[in-house]
Length: 100
Length: 386
Image (cartoon, rainbow over all chains, first blue to last red; front, side, top):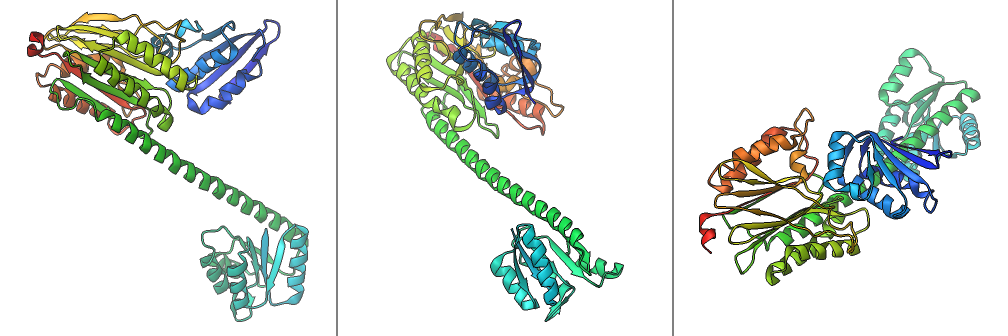
């Protein structure tokens, strides 16, 4: 499994953990990870601490997630290594996401 | 699934037929060598049982003949024979047998073996079906990548490629990913540059390239400001691309006097290599094109002054992410050193070739994953006089 989804009922948040290469091959799996929560008032976090590589397709998938969930929904991107954080910052993802 | 039973004894033909029928197999029987060959060719069974003794020939030569006629299909062939010495069995297996069951016929043994061979045939069939699909999709994707290349090559025809002060290098990866580099001069002597990197691969990545190129050439013809060009392309890409696609880009305008304006979104640092070898950096300050709506889009520009013999170098992220044989990325720092060193050459074309060969040297025999594009523009002394 390259994507693990944990729903924490107590905190009303969803943790999506991505493992390995975050690229186009995860397109459908990543969409499925949040599709069931669209329209609910839940906060999301995408845990990238186990992501080794991320390409522009993955950035697109994150943007698509933001669009589907709506502006009022907060998405936190956490645990990214320096290389990936740099990619996120070059594309100014801090404008759309909370990067930790 | 179909089973062909070759046996000269009626009793065995009957027993095998009965058992195989119970496993849901269609059965046809043959009593002679020729009959077996004819049925095999015409009926194309998935499984065969045969005896070593066959009327009109031997089972050993029959199995060889049948194996020749499988046309690449996987057809397990099982000997059923009362001659079950080690040496006989060895002959059977050498001739191509997949299994051997001794006579007298043991129903339980036969049933188990038939089930296992059935499973194997189904697995192989499923695998070849999947394989055919993969071959089909692979061919389709290769064709799409070719089309994408053709589309982009067509776009690039209008670009400057004869000017000694402009060098554009594109090294395409096996899997095409939509880098776009456009350079053209306006009638007032200003030079407009677009270097972009679309998300995605293949044909889908090149879809956005056509309208971007059109907007670029319109801007060249009509002297449109680059902040307006950036907003225009952004709006256009939002309307034509799905939300998971965008285009990281630099749009640069160099005025004849040496004033440089740029809009950058989602691109790695670009460089101005000063004549003395030091570097200044263009930083992209914005999100890539095709993400933010018109109200949020920021068209703020950056500015620089460039003087004679300064070189502007813009590379897509494929360059700093180029991997060597050990799997290590080139990295931004090494790229900076290369830019500073290579472009010391007063001949821009040679400088560009030098960078290209050094990159290829770094890469060695490792596979190039991303497209690589780098563009260099040099300001000549004479241009200052315009």
